[in-house]
Length: 227
Length: 239
Image (cartoon, rainbow over all chains, first blue to last red; front, side, top):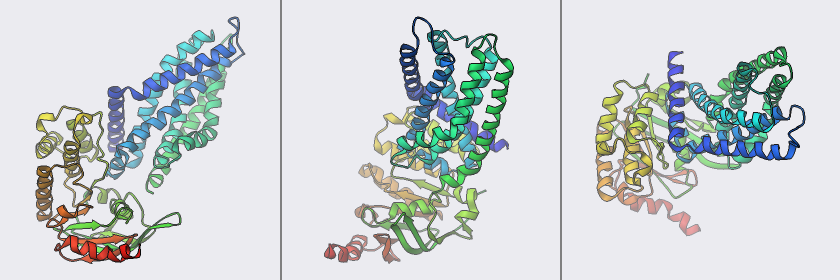
């Protein structure tokens, strides 16, 4: 177990170092997510009023779209330099490599969310910060579930010619439960008063999805990565 | 953890990609001390064969044995004994030379990482560029660094895909000396190359592939170019 954690940490650390040097993924996902929120804000907000729960939906649409961008780009980088083959050839546990990549992607998406949430709160006049711990838990569990499936698919498709098209086509239908859970959980926080019980229910459900997706991904990563 | 072996044996190895057959019943073996050439035109199956030998690709049929081990059963122990230098150099351009080596040394769970990294940088003649990011290196410098990255864990079987690409004459000569040294130390070195001038005098044995099949298998390293041209002549005549 110690070896597993060591390898996962090493891979995560490497991915984050590469990202800190290039700032490529976070800058493009932040730009994309902000553009997405602004377009929806101009379309849906009239005279300072908006559709009920629109903020929750827009937030998770922006997370899903920008997350897909981050997933694709992370593995495109490994494909371009052929370093994914070097990682696969190492005698390390391949599931540990998957976990390392997953943690790095989650960290990058969370950075995007840290900028996205205040923007959504501002543009949609949404009380997203009334229950910050619950919001943090929903964002973390939702992002983890989305990225768990996304990391597996992005790694699997890295050598496919039409990977950019196939990734969302495969990813969105499977992660629909996570995105719905994120939207409903976030919407529960926006009511007056905050529906804490409902938010906690969705956090529980999202945690369940996380466990299922991560276990399935750990189980299938090695066979999928050996052609 | 390393799988110690002194012989690599391929028996009737085939690989299909959909309906296309990339390799067809390829058989040969090589032993410690061999510098074994994989020769053939583009698309002959050399890179597919290297990927199979590196355990990154499963053969559709046939068997590859690393001494007493197979790729499926040997798993991590076999991988720990392999070194692959692909046509792409498998280095992170955003990391420095030292960081690249350190990352792979730790990934392989090697001991005494700092000393190994220092030695590898010295062997690549990049000790003075250790803290420079790889994206600023020339192709030749990256090639030398990638070779040392491949050798960090002292692999029993070294697989090289076009290792002379981008090297100047002095670097190519240094690489040839290095490969001879590794073979003399009991490693199995397999080189896929188009460069027959450099292969001449370097290879101790070779196989020539044509459309995924073994066109010729040579048990010595003599007259590589003449034999290569002879083996592929019927194809040219036919085309």
